Length: 103
Figure 1: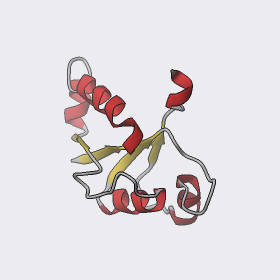
Figure 2: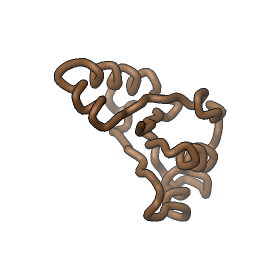
Figure 3: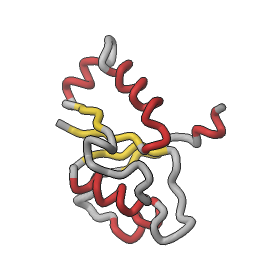
């Protein structure tokens, strides 16, 4: 199973997308790639954890993080963490467009 986890601020949107992907015509891909949507709670990640804690936790659980907030504002911001911690054995982070700009 390939775990997917949504960043805390977009859980609802990613949950809705995962539900759609489990119905035709996309359900084949969901099953074929053995995808599983999980949550911060299921991975024991505090909702208010900084990006470094989130990054380390999702890597530990072999999950792919989906986020809409990827910046390098400080040393614990997600892009900074990726820059100083990412290697060839790490899973990717999927960054979608800024949800605030979509409203």
